[in-house]
Image (cartoon, rainbow, N blue to C red; front, side, top):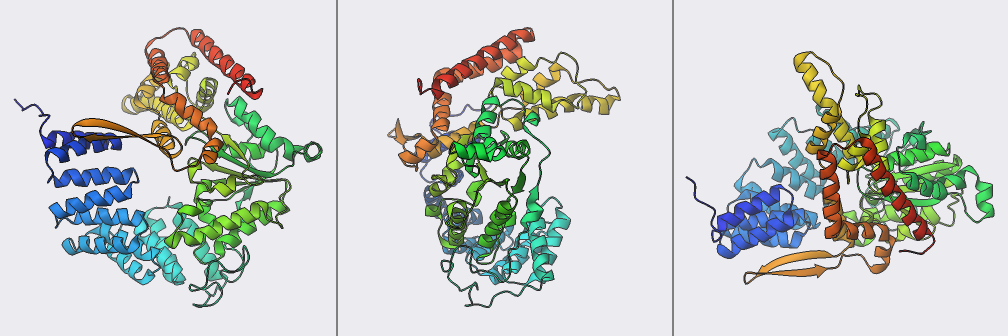
Length: 593
């Protein structure tokens, strides 16, 4: 017979916190660790795990404070110093991070993570010789670590040692052929070597000691032209909106903002709707933003440039700006053209949050601004589309008029879209007749397009596994789908929680003298920025209400376990669709908010 957990035992709260941490509920885990520490102020593991929770919430100051307390109580634990070093690293305090990695390695001379992390810190400080030494230690400890070869190759690349860089990139790809970044860096390094590229000397214009802020936009940097070949990035997508299931209202928004002005520029010009400009798509991940952009290019039969961040970024000063300029020039020469920046926050991040070794990215953002609306930027019939899951991380200047002036929220698929997406995904699969797609649409309420693909894959895997074991093949049934739905949950709730913290109000719970206190904290964004994301804020507010949570859970549970004829669920979808259409009609006329 085991003892029951005691409410006055620190370890009871500690283990509860660990379970919450494993479930990704870091705020609640912190509350449990708080109680464990109150009951036992010398509980080193509780401080450490609370610090780890704060780290996952990106509250690095509190994380460092807890790691420091844990180190006082357990001063010879290398893991504590390594983790505190990570927190300093995330704060871009690389000197202090190196001090902690040194301490970790002092207690464990074969601590692979500490060598690797210290190498990254040295690289951020542009001390590439020490960085390569640390990455070499990592490789000696684990010769199969593909990423270590890749990152050491980058360090050699920055040191202009192209021979060693190429050898490391090749070894990384040999160990992990799917490492696309290593492949991109290998191609760039080989192109530099084949072209007889000569790196600028220290102190020369564009050299390592040159000022990144001098010169005109796109000037300076490495010798010669851009390292990216925009022609290779350009394509003509062979898809259009017929390949995109559902999302009728969104398609119309895209047509008005992007397609109509490019298809008939003269008519658009007559009414002051110029072709080109910028559109930013934002919304939860896995909801088809990238696919929709490609379909948009196919819909208006325009050229399409997929400007990947990994292709644009260049290690040499001025190289990134030249690559951006080359991409925009190619788009202008091949108008009508759509230039697409996926994860635009990686290229156009907030400059007010860039410091230390990230300063060079400010020049990239400045160049992007220049290309979008500079005096010499003739962007007629060149449409720039940016997509992001983190719109709060995009520099506010990029969202001003003339740049990404049109922001469109791409929501999770609605009831009709989920039904059509499921039908589209099973077209080439052996499906039994009369699958209740309308009922499945309700059962997958709140699922993204990627979640629906996961459901379809799991449903198809059930008869496949049976056929593999028994040799008897059968079609995919509705039962397989509902089993898959019960197994595959929506991946969107964590994103909505993150969005709420970034642009909405956040509740912070703390326990003082045994009493729970709730403090409402505003996000880091100003009111004008919040207004840009009003659609998302409305969605977050609705999802946070008690009635919506009950409604959504009831709908999914009912659809999973109540096998009504599918036409009954079809009526439900029709009712929801009509309600949304009426709401949009009223909203467009300003009669409702």
